[in-house]
Length: 155
Image 1 (cartoon, rainbow, N blue to C red):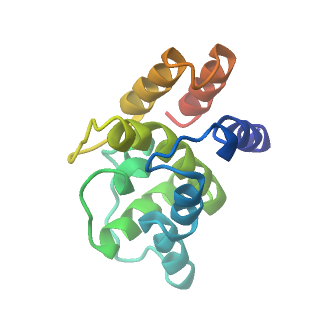
Image 2: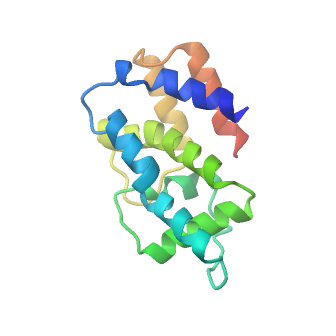
């Protein structure tokens, strides 16, 4: 199933359909490898989650979106986020795919549409972005439904 969504994301968010906005293909490629949660995944390969307090009260999507809000946290916090995602049986590859999805939806809403949020983003924001992108003709109704199905997979 993940391969289907990777292909869908590539098609929907290809550089051919990109605008000159903040969330360019180059930005997404960089954040996929160098974003705060990507760096935490690398750090945690060398160390385990021992001593990192869980974050059980946050939704999975809220955790994924932590690097998208307009607040920068300390490395240890991002390590806690990744550890919590691992506790929920998500792999680093799934986390990476979900992060790109979140940047192209909640990140798009936060930065491209200037609905800046300093407190938190989650599944409601992602859904709002998907609906807005469909309304603006950036994605088709079929793509909208596929993206919503992907979103709901991790609720």
